[in-house]
Image (cartoon, rainbow, N blue to C red; front, top):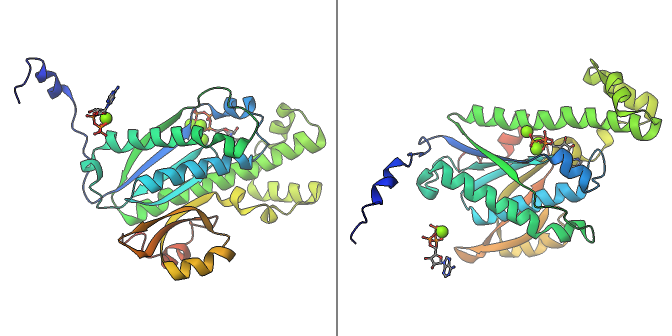
Length: 270
Ligand code: ATP
Ligand code: ATP
Ligand code: MG
Ligand code: MG
Ligand code: MG
Ligand code: MG
């Protein structure tokens, strides 16, 4: 086909192919969700409607991007890990990241009514995205540990903060002052002695975040499990033949200890 004289402008586009042999991680995060949470009357410290909607949106992404092997989410963020040797979009970073974050955003809006029922969406939410490459398995494990440690630290702090505000009637400024410089052990102690609350009894989803994994299951096994399994989540798609299906499962488990990786070796070998 003849090219127009304008075609040369294409050369100004930058090459952004992700380095081979590296884990590709895309992390999305809600833009100004502090305000979004206020406007939409989120329950503090953890609004389950929003957490479950985030997971639903992440599941839409995983169903579309077959080379994602794992996703981890907490608060207003989700991280997606691509298979190390993925060749999706020729490993072009901007293609992967922009397609992913726009699908996440549109799914979040699309599924909103299912989670927030009659509470209307007040304005279109936005999510930022970044792409990071990790050359070693240890780097990837440490990345995920970092996000889960962040979930824990924030949740412990927020649990204390909102207890002081909601149950002791303290102002946000005073509560913040009260918690300044406290260690994790001080916060645990405060919850236990002042609020009769054992932090470890709080829901795992709040303490550990949400992990999405793919599981291949035989169709018959799947039928047996579907009645009892608490882990099965949403739709399933048939792959290769109709005997083996891939299902997305949601876990709220520890991913910092090595135990998780020894029990799930297929993730790093995918
Ligand atoms: P930025 O645009 O820089 O990300 P942000 O306001 O989104 O700004 P974050 O550090 O991402 O800042 O924090 C997200 C905030 O959104 C939390 O601090 C919390 O106030 C609120 N939030 C998000 N999800 C929930 C939830 N499920 N329940 C309660 N509050 C939430
Ligand atoms: P990719 O994901 O690579 O962008 P694509 O199918 O979106 O794949 P494009 O080159 O972007 O490919 O082309 C968009 C196609 O969408 C057009 O070729 C046309 O078939 C269809 N399309 C988009 N907008 C319209 C429209 N307003 N009316 C009719 N067809 C449209
Ligand atoms: Mg931020
Ligand atoms: Mg945010
Ligand atoms: Mg955030
Ligand atoms: Mg197009």
